[in-house]
Image: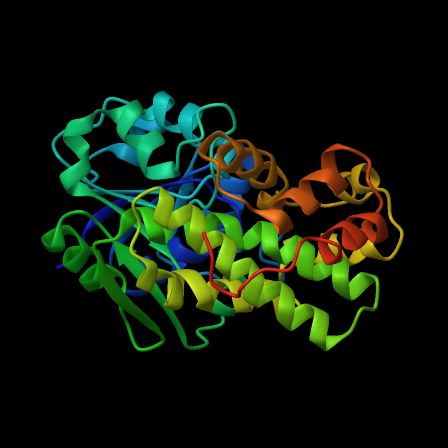
Length: 335
């Protein structure tokens, strides 16, 4: 029997996941901010701003009314941009009953340095943690709605909760793997966007395949250092939520973070490039948050630092590259 599901956030990722859930036979309502978007999704079965040339499941509905979206919801999916998660969930709190809560947002909150699951726990209460899971892994929304094969991770401190999420989402084109390492799953999903900016800048500078491979590999090393320092399992970073998502975002043509990096590496001013983007580029805010978090914990993150210096300090991409290449030689595994 299908579940009653509320999806908070009608961007590309929220809409794609809502589409999958509706295809799986669930009663899905997306809570959106714009009435025109709500009408378009509910009546025309499209969301052209975020997923152009895509037909959505006919049973999928959207609304701007919190009460309508959450009425009877057994499952709440948070799919807002990371910077909007706290405000969005504060607006829908308190939740009735004990719904399953899934976070599909990837990022670290600026200021608090919290991952999205911790933002949710702070906002909705620690009692939600056993019923809270995070969804992450290599997945472009545009490919998911085309029903192309994808695999992601559902991570929760509760094995039963992860298995429940797996059952709700999995179908013939989306495979869900379960995990209990919430921290590693979220840090991998957040910081891969920063490394993708670096990979894009490298491609924009036309530094070649060797440089891109080095950035991906050494990027994974520094993401792993931070994740382990925060209590994650190192092995998680070799899986879908770590290496898998990193490779996709650093090399895929649909990656917004890589696209922005390419434009900056090609000579574009970061502020002008970002102003021209129609959707949120998560890696920009995450670079700032990760830079501060790594510094506060004493975790060395040279690629993140280089991206931060380009975005926030006005350092030119070639100067940032020179600083990276001039670092003191080290063993491959350290720290």
